[in-house]
Image (tube, rainbow, N blue to C red; front, side, top):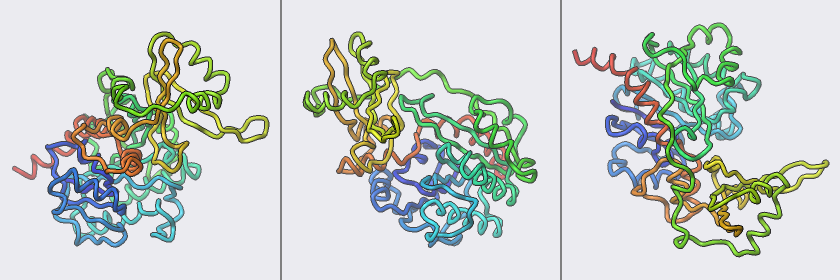
Length: 369
């Protein structure tokens, strides 16, 4: 099966789709991500186009792909405001992608399926108007569509909920039904759709994966292979915790690994910085590094001793389901940016195996006959 990958980043959707899929075209605007993509895909020179999605035309896209995948930028996401191009900011890049899909459709080359991946806020932004605009765009081009809210924590020790909007020309009854990924937010977003979009809705059936059998500690580097903060720096970190989070540390028995984020909270009318720790075996959602507080900290409590250090780039890659053979950028900041802005590969693999491949297989078999 063939696919186009837009906003491709380091190629994590391609890795998740796997060897049964061939990338016919990939695009990303970010030079650092494009360089990472090239380092991991030897044939990138044949299909990767670095640059602005608005500069592309349908002539740049070869053939007719089975799938178009788009993990469009999520910052200030807005679909309801119109097609402003670069003047509208990064999130309007979605319409740079969508106008290509419209152009392909006009030429009879529309992809048989489309997946749009984004943060869960897509379901509620602008009071649901953004999701409704997306649904209207898909329905207007003859696609059936539905949303699945999947937390990567079902596959990896990272809390990372994301929305996957799956659109296809047909919604076979065998592939629709109940799913644990029809969350309350998805159902509420569906209920807010206007009639025309609601009529095109499909409740895609996607089963839950087998229970995850790894935790955060299992993905970490050995203690003697990483740089630990000084005792004074660790005390400073703990001093930023409120009573609840300090109590979590005091309650630890044996060696326990936790993940810490620093956040700004409002307490008694004042903005204060707080460190918040979790010991549930999960890392917090990876972010792109824009400052010290955005980078996740590892906390290890053992026999009353508390140690802390920053999450490494390789550990971040593992939390995205990337193999250790995946070539990371040389600088930690760039590597964390690529990982934090990507899609968890095992989630893509599950979606492809359980829904996309069965959805596309009948059309491909019919074409072969």
